Image (cartoon, rainbow, N blue to C red; front, side, top):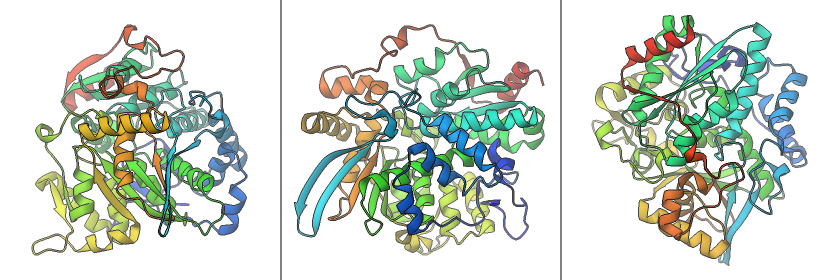
Length: 494
């Protein structure tokens, strides 16, 4: 399996790489994102065999199609070390923790054409109570394995709007040869999210609160990744979803959700995914391209509706920092979706030259237009339906109403981002096709809104009762790339 950059075109600015070659990095040298040169395809026989597997062994079967340069025995050991009931131990009462990502039936109504079924896939049973743990725990083990083989070090530089940061830090804390420098928008995460990150006292963890929004943090990560000399000298890697291994690890739970919701391969399911940076739903796109019988992939946005606008109109229009709303589903307060470039690469027939030109236009003109209207940049929006994408938008009031409804009807407390997903999923239910909403986090991480919606605090797993009261360690800095580079160099000593 070889990987190519989304911006490698006729000039071949970035030769194909192996999985291990790209594992520790982020952006390709030409500024693009890595994707397989061709997606591996799965057969009906494989799907049938995978129905019987544990989550760890299913992860091995999926990942070995992409990580072909890691010995099978080593890869199986890594997935079995990662996906255990001991690691994913924060399951809801009554759930079987060994299932790792159990399904919950929310509603089923029978009518003309078949049942309209809505399910919730629990992805937040890991150590930081968010779906990011599903990939980040594996990434931590993959990094440690690769670094040990090469007697090397890695300085992780990442950005978070809330959940990526804590998942990365909990996965990397104490790991030999790894330091983590994590940017987050100052005072724009929930109190729980902030405490989860800033209370860590491990000497290899550095939290930097940036005066700005998430997009400012993400832009700095890309700027540092594009400075190839600094990146090499400081041994910079990334855990944001621009990292291919992050995305491919998320592909696994689409397979698990499908296999758990169906009894044979003639059945299709749809997924609704709360979406900000497009990484989570991009994994669904990859699963669909591999042949998983997915009908629709529904992107649910909050008031920051860049993705919803594109899937309705064909216009990708990023927002300026001042136009980015601070909402009650803050992990999706994103106006420039990094992983969107991976889908556009496929939509444009893998034309790297056009992809490069369009995303350069994002930087110079704030977006591009594929609607096919006069003066637009292309007419590929007409092809979007072939990939199964739909979208919808949710507001603060929608969130409150959905949280109350799901609690009253089903006795389940969902977080604010998952509520965005449920609200939008209900708008796209199809008779005879099960709709699965991917859970984003446990409700405790966003207690301020849960209290507003329900009048009571969200239940907290053991060990998280008073996390906000713990001492916090972090640095506040401006959104300045050169100051950030100096900070990294100072603390690595390189």
